[in-house]
Image 1 (cartoon, chains in turn green, orange):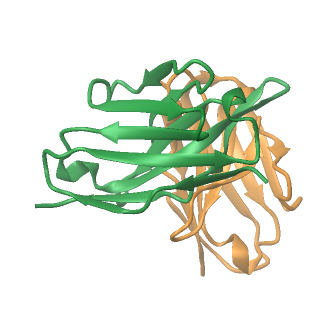
Image 2 (image 1 turned 90 degrees about the horizontal axis):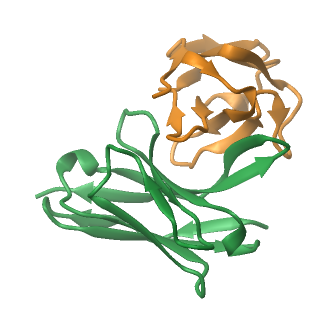
Length: 121
Length: 107
């Protein structure tokens, strides 16, 4: 079955960087785009950006442009997201989610299990 | 940017009740781009409905999605104990957005 497995929780100091991974299995990795979404405590889900694994093209939310880089390794069927210049407001659970489309409809499914990133001095 | 507003923030209901969750967009959106997810504590969101009205694989028929334009709804008939959770609506656009969620709690 289609599965996304993310890397373990991280604790970082303000100003540091973090790189999270999302390993896909159960489908052809290059066929579907991959998105990153985060959920800060008590906040709504927030879309960060996506990558087309077939060519590496990316698009980012304006809220994260310049501070986030999404990459992929097709040999490993994995997508990565690096967030730089971390601040306490970046404390959140970060999810990867696969793009889906059918008959004109589009949505995210499945989702990874989430990676908690805690930014604290 | 599309902004989704969900209401109410919290629904307090009993098992067997029906729940009506609203998701309103600040401008017209395509029915193809509206999805609903269920999220339980400590878990990732799970797809319920895509394309406004289509149930995802394995989702029971007590979950029903409707709407068009700016007003969309998720109705849960005959609430089961496992249905008490947070529900998010989602617009898949050039910059995907989510509503703030509706919590369905046990009364």
